[in-house]
Image (cartoon, rainbow, N blue to C red; front, top):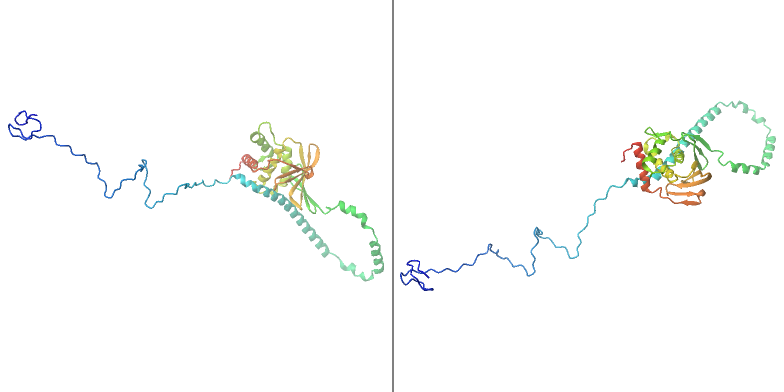
Length: 343
């Protein structure tokens, strides 16, 4: 190597130049690099097998307890949705029955008023009686009267039994209303369409029933299917009875829903309603006397149980026409035609 002071060549490993005595400097060993950080006092090396948490991991708060193995995170269901308007249809059956009862009440009220008026008349007649004609009662021949009574006791009344059986409802009352005639017997109410309700009839909002049928044919039913209009008019007549019985749209809407369901289900049958009879013994059964395809029959319809029987109650008819889904469709269609906003 060469002395940096005098330039004399010197053997390797000599610490001082033999020519000038200058100390020879060799390369100092490199110090070990210091780590970029110092371990925190008390730091413990992670156990073997420790895995570095994934990026973005958040340390649980102090006191957090790890769920046991097999723990299933609870599932929170969405809040229940608002009930469909279809559920309201459950009340339709009860409302139809109430409408029928309302018709009976309306007529019975008239009967009661008529009876009161007659009683007032009889009372006035009694007050006007001249009792002077009875002053000679003491002169009556009681022996002759007793003889007449004995002859009456010997009369054979059996010949009148047949007459009595044939006139069980001899005390029935009949009344005529806007769309139907109503007769009240001892235990029954009979409602008969009188022909006054037809396509030109306006029940609400200035819109007639013919327009309702046109809307159903064109907007509700599939192509080529048409609602049975004449049957529908008969059904509405025996349900509505009189225009004065209804004060708001909700009252007639319930009847229209059920009547449209029936008239659509029997769209291709020639059927007309003669009357509907409601017996006090079974008030939920509506006995529709009909002429179907030229044959007289009685259809027993129970709107509460949603059942229909033909052949005077002997044959059960199966259909889904009273399902809540279909009744909801009719409700929407009727409200749309009459311009009623849904709730």
